[in-house]
Image 1 (cartoon, rainbow, N blue to C red):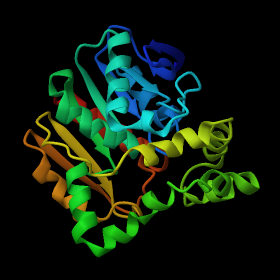
Image 2: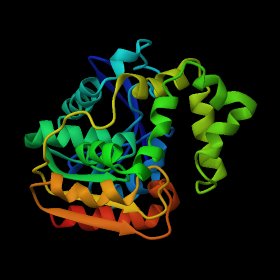
Image 3: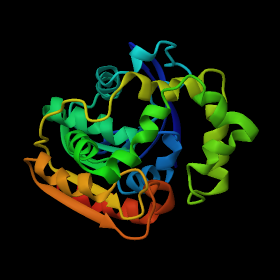
Image 4: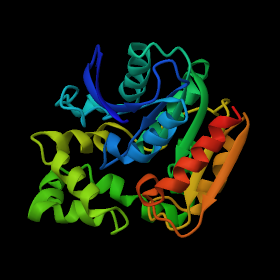
Length: 276
């Protein structure tokens, strides 16, 4: 059974979902934009049923109890700090870390900066930040794909995305995510201050900020129909992992892997964890 949790930290209280025995091997799952912890519903339930202790928080800005109003408070150091603070509150000295989209970016930085805290890393969709930065500089295709990051820092983005019952926000999901899930994401981001908080991740952070190679065992999952991240950065990611590395390419799936291909995502994750 999936539980609803409240996790107090020095930054505030994070809402979360969790499953599995309290003494199970700990797995923390981080969502991206514009979703929430529930994008991991299937994975949390599957992991819990297999004896893991899986927890997925609504991250900074998505949890009402941790919603700073200043964009600078959404920098990568604050986001990584949240990961460690949540793990500390859960009494997890070492844990497996999983992330999708922005959650994967945070996970890459956490793995690079705090390898002693992680048993393994699973990054979904988002390549290693250094590989992405290089691709943005040298690959015209990735440069074009990444223009939205600059555009979304504009002050009118909130209104544009939420107008007409979140029409522009809904289009981001490319009709690949179930309507009920999209309704949930739009409803949550329509809360006062929530969309601004989510966009502040883009306003405070910069994709490809300096990050070292990752030494922990890593699986990177990339889908061929991802409109955000192209093959250049995806294939280069292996050069930024010095530890055991597995690259899993998924055919005919969009950027929204945890939602669109939930059973496949869960099976890949379980297989990765089972050998670590």
